[in-house]
Length: 356
Ligand SMILES: [Mn+2]
Image (cartoon, rainbow, N blue to C red; front, side, top):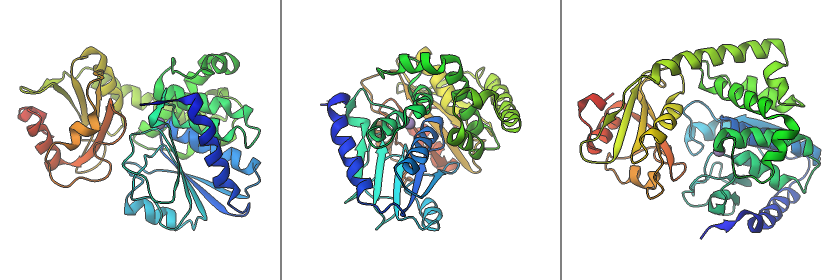
């Protein structure tokens, strides 16, 4: 049974307070966050709130292109920063943990794969409504620092993950306060940067870490704005091609697949586009141009009776990495070596046109 968000929050706030109370203010805290607008938003809320709580050494580190938090590549990168504590947000929760021996607070809303022993976990997945990570970060830090001026960052992350009508009671007021147009522009700009072939995360992160208003992301620093406009144009051009691709249908199961070949991370948007049009199906948008030798794919469904992580991981395609079949009940995906991806689409009942 899901717990109402309002009843879950006091306990989550207490766990957050206890985690930071146990750390000396000189501790190096690394905030490891997902690279999308929700993850960067959550990262920026921590990155700006923790110094206000007196912490002197705070770094925000987004995940890399195609990188899962629970892999050796990520661990090596983080270990090199010699953190005394970690905040891991919008990257999932896995019993393996990220860095052994380093106190870690997880702030997340994805379907978990167990919990690491001894970690502090704030997990909105079991709540009703399920919050976005940036919204969750904002709510748990509110009692610990004066962060009302950061509410727009939480709104940006929330609108990016859950749409303009996200079920956050405060969102209508935040949209009035910060202007819905500027919030939406900020969502688009931040997401375009990670979707573009350049995979530029630093530009939007710096803006989220410094801007006083979402308008600054669309109309502030001239160089950054020009860069973000370029990313938007590239992503738009790639999307307009991809939107015309016709889906393929499985002969035996309620799956559809849209094959893509783009250097941009547009597959989640294409899967989302077809989710509503093919409401009785699971739609996979599969992109073989995003990572070399790999098919990156997003799966979406409008069907509430299906749990996509379970469905995907039930298919026998041999050993898979930790990024395969994670996420949300109706929104999952992964990346697979081409041969293994082809086994997946064969098993799902597609013909050879679906192979990458
Ligand atoms: Mn998220």
